[in-house]
Image 1 (tube, rainbow, N blue to C red):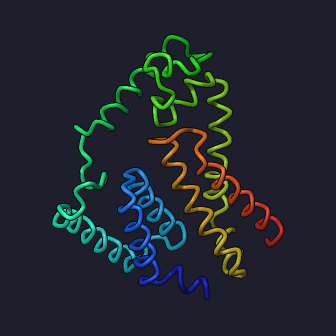
Image 2 (cartoon, rainbow, N blue to C red; image 1 turned 45 degrees about the vertical axis):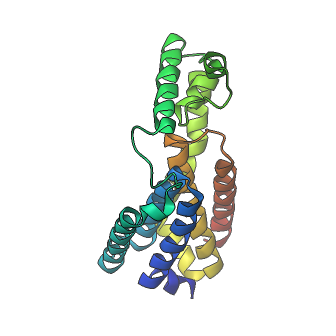
Length: 220
């Protein structure tokens, strides 16, 4: 039953539409765009280059883009609709990023933990991307962190065929693999581009990954 849904044109469009709608209303810009990328990556992981599904997703994206343009006046306070390079939040994040790079260049091995809080007098002024792990933990901590975060990616990609073979036999494993991969890919993009390296999403992603790895070894 689960296998049929994951190959269904209607399932993917409904899944994408419902969650994008709620994320859009929440006004979290990174969540909207990264969730969209994560869904596309998950679609590719499970179905490959299925022309029918990809054309459906493309059509849906066109509708979403046109809708956000023509109906943006009804959501004037929505941060997704108002996003631009002149947005204060975007400008501040670029400022924090430049500062972090300068601090790392001064002390690449040790980093400079919390330097942003001293410079901008606010603990929330950290660079919202992966470079924060280097700034706070130095190059050694950064390398260890990368190992932890990227290991699931190599596991999912390296064992893709075997994982999908097991998922065809057990619907429960298929559902677990689906949501685990979606959550992991979404978290990976957020951590790399626009979130704290210790975001709560990371705990969910690594926790669900460990469940997949354990079930995979017991079922294969």
